[in-house]
Image (tube, rainbow over all chains, first blue to last red):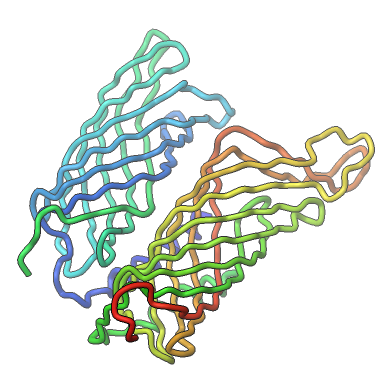
Length: 187
Length: 219
């Protein structure tokens, strides 16, 4: 299955790499984009798989810089023994993205976002600080829509009387996003 | 399957075209189509076959929307039948050319959402078998993929699409095992908690241009 996903995304990458018909970067200051999707994840040290709903809102404050906020609504977590170590583990992130320069609709980016986790480890509820980095890309369609694929690494710890649970996690998101241009640009 | 994937991988390269001078305003074009579907890498690893239909509504010269419904059945080792009903939409973007012209390829990428109903039912329930013989679930999904139209005529195309669909819903799975009491292969159907379930869908569709719903009537 992993090979299959790699093949699909590699194929999409081939298309993006060749789609240079405009010779001009599509993204610009004033783009507002929003997404909503399903996000599978893996808490690495504890070997726990997670499922969250992922929402995102992002605004391009310059041609290559955007501010973004992300919310993850926890649905489920399960370790390899079938146990659920959390009643919930919601998280919220805010930060900025740097968008690499391209000459087409392809928009690769790197984001840095501090955040917080609001988690219950089946005994107590804790708010824990998090830090995360994101690597991904958008591919903007003609207008209104874009495809996005991204991976996020989160670092943090849930510390309580019951013990310490690592919140260091890899999360993966993809899907259809919506965008509009808030500021009209000169062509 | 490997050959199909290799073919799909190279279709966009073969069909790549730089000619995009004919940037027609095609917004409002309405197409109706039927399609056959292969569903791979889903329950117990068996491949499903399906039929369905779709309509496409163009929102711009490079932007299309695809609204689809699929009915897919999978034979799980002769022991059970899985049935999937899909209804959803995808936004389709043409990165290279949007020229709908006889003899031309029009490659695209797509992403969208889907809602699904799945049921798994045992083919034969033995007397005294108290295990689960039927399970069903509703789920929602996100998908993305790529494909190409081949325009057999100015108003008719054949399209091949490969997309990965990730479902969120209660886990329904079927496991084949050797029954020690009967000495025969048997199947265990289970319905679990919330889970993710991904599969690859390959669609081959035939589409005909029906009408232009808004804008210039001239094509």
